[in-house]
Length: 465
Ligand SMILES: [Zn+2]
Image 1 (tube, rainbow, N blue to C red):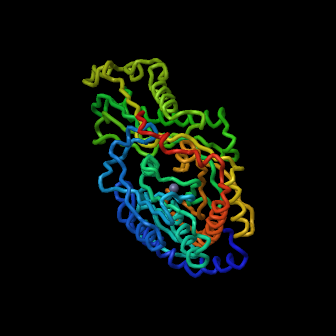
Image 2 (image 1 turned 60 degrees about the horizontal axis):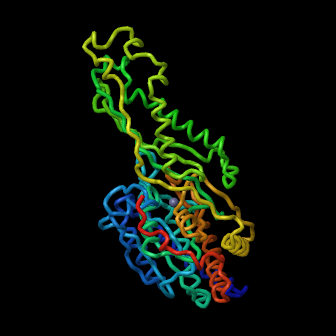
């Protein structure tokens, strides 16, 4: 049921009293460096916290074969010993499911003021890798549920689920595995950092690796050759241009206000082994944002076409390498012109994520907006971002309303990432009200969205791509 004024006051008071417990839970999570492949210590902390909040907790394996599924990203490493954690409260068929990702991106210690995996509290902020994205959201959801269970247990008598997934930051395969195992809800809330706004839409995201191979040689011939390293600027430009042209040509109605929604990023460059040798190979790890209208395979084809065009002889003015240097390199014992080209291969290497969008007028959004306003006394903002979240699986594949609502964070994926502790408390006040409202609708059989009863995970099948 919805909270009465008196219940709401009691609940808000309890949130304040339990906040310190939530912050120390967050500190324990941040202290676990749960980068890809190292998620399990943090998952155990989540499992313990859920059990202490009245959830039945189990581990959920990610099948090694998941990479073959049409909705999967390219797995980053074997899944043995790496689990999702699933919690169920009041039954096995959640009305409301919380989804959080336990994985964090790596941190470059040299750029941080303090150790990224030693949480530091200062001036109302908690600093540490993952504090914002998205362990602060775990703290917020658990705080809301505990305070509700303690202050107004009747308002928490609906079936609630919580899934803590791996690989959100690179593939989405943790959430996909949970869907394939039948873990979903009629509505889903992901407490990703959203500055207490309703994050409703994301772009398509693709990870692509470009492998460049040449023949190498002595550094004195570097000027005469098209080398893997020499090709990098043209490739970075070409891929960047693709994102800029998508942003200009395919405006996304949900991304109004995002200056350039479809950005590309070369996040990784590996090449070379000696300063006086021409590097014979190079690998570029690229993240490409693309419009919702494109399937990931089509985005990949366009990236490959742009890459091949950028290093084609015509793109280099059609001039033979030896002509540019004045003297044929073989005359000086260098590499023959026919060996001077480079090969390139382009392959998906992680995310193959479609864009997604939840209707800003969806009943779940309206419910959240009214709970946010009642808890915090101000209207909620509804927006989309040039990134992705695992909400896409629920929205795109099951037609299940899913949105992100989480704390205020700064520097996510960067140095000195931090979360605003007061925003965790404020967000918990909204979430507790939302849980109660959804429970009330469920009890009176007014489901938050009409299409939900028919959504089925069976439709996902074991479809191979
Ligand atoms: Zn995140």
